[in-house]
Length: 433
Ligand code: ADP
Ligand code: MG
Image 1 (cartoon, rainbow, N blue to C red):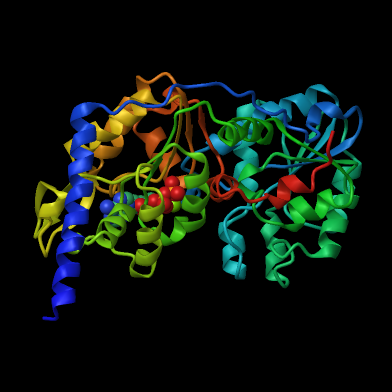
Image 2 (cartoon, rainbow, N blue to C red; image 1 turned 90 degrees about the vertical axis):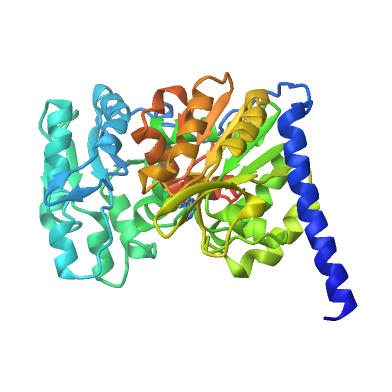
């Protein structure tokens, strides 16, 4: 072996050992954190439903009724429940309410059958304890006639907006004619579907381009809570997990600029560990992101905190080891106890905490401990605690910790794109105050 390769090899080992030693030092010595300070949060400047006179007006409300359905049964109606405040406000203010939503993806006639919103109309009717008129089409005489016959306070739900996708993806590609047509059905447009705000579709950007528009209570709350992260009370810690680094490159690039600490767990931690020269066995590796991880670690030495131990599975046996002792055939599937302890120290000192990505393979209970322990830690910490990302939101709710969080974002992709610092087209198009 070339002497330079050997030297390089030992230098790498030294760097890794130093990093691990440093993490242990933090664990033992409870590193001093910066003192917290407070910054005011900027007011949201978009028009809201409160800024309009709704009396006798046809108000199109874009809601997110993309609920999970199996064998004709709604498995979780929380998205419908979360829309009720805006609906009740509109009804109380004598609006003629026209609801629009997508449900699933529509590529074939068969998809249409499986993704009708009729079942959602029935659930909504039950939740509100009043009639909801369902129109089984997305355009045409029946829809127009029913809308024209609405009385103030009536609620109508139109069929799945994505039925229009069978005809050249008109909804999802924000077809100009379709946006204009839907806008012609109402007087005012209210966007209350945060989950689709990162996409320009006919049923959000299309309609808002043609009539007066505002946001509903649900989107208003999302923006209010997520914008706390633009000017966080410090220290601001981020827990970042999930499977792949690749999906979160833009997020990490943005977070290193705004967070004080980024605690990395989950599958993505193993690519970070591998990029600093550790053997990660058969743990999930995102090879194309290794150079990115190296650079980010190098540029943010004190900011990025990696796991110091890992719960691994090897031929059906589960064992917890330090990250320097991962074996060839080990698959790392959760953070270990020392990492949990280390992460808790940072979290305990933080005044703002954002969490995206489970820190273990939570599809299996054996690897849910790290995620659960962090939930438990957050429960007892007085800080602004914001959860973003579809899987993270589900697991925090399923484990029973929803009530201890300041905010759990309803929009998986939308909340991530917001946190990446991107403009959300569905919000951008809404009129300013
Ligand atoms: P979110 O939807 O909240 O943004 P992600 O989709 O990024 O979260 O991450 C969730 C996925 O990450 C889950 O399917 C989980 O099993 C996976 N994951 C977490 N830790 C690991 C791991 N160690 N190995 C493989 N997958 C993991
Ligand atoms: Mg996900």
